[in-house]
Amino acid sequence: NANTTTPTTSITMTIGHLPQLPLVCLKSADSRNTEDVVRGKATIIDFWTTKCVRCPSALDKLDRMAQEPKYSDVQFVSICCDKLDGARNIIEKDEDLRWQHVSHFFMEQEDKEKAKQQLGFKSVPFYVVVDEDGEIQQMGGERKIDFDEVPGVVRPETPVYEEEEKDDREFMLRVDDGFGDMPDIVRPTMKTMGSALSHRPMPTTFSTMSSFVAVTPSTTITSNAAVSERRTDFSVPVSHVS
Image (cartoon, rainbow, N blue to C red):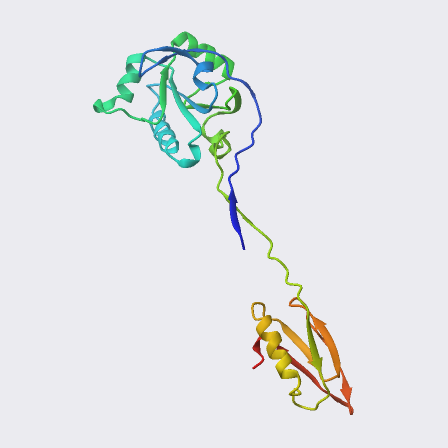
């Protein structure tokens, strides 16, 4: 059987467009905005604060996900809604940059209040999932996000099997009268059939009636005969005839 694989991507429902809010890139200190950051790429955004005890482990998870092949077309972004220096201290802990596979941004207090109002969140970590057009597909706490349904995520490849071609070749088999034993005249013919059909063994029933029967590899022949008040049927697998 031929075996091919077809990757598929997730299908989600649009909630609304991501509001445009000012940001500061923690790496370069450049001024950006949410619309610019997510443009052209499916993105998972994580809003967090420096006082949140669960936020570091949530960022650990996102950083691991960002390294998985199925998320290769997904961008991971964190937005700290707290003090700028506090965010830098956490991300650059012990002089080692944490969460290197996540892009980190900062949002001023005034803009955080706008984000909370427009996106409707009251606690962190809070996730917003957008597609490449900036349309929100999912948002909420971790339990409300299905990370396997993020736009751009490649699902496990599904095997596709091609149907095996049917063998429709026909063979002529002659069966003569006999009692008790399969007539010798049948054996050479059956040997030939057995060799030809050895790739597909099939149980086939032969009668001792004198007749010609056309069979295919997908056909089972059943023929009953009464000779001198005695039934003389023989059942043999075609490919096992010696």
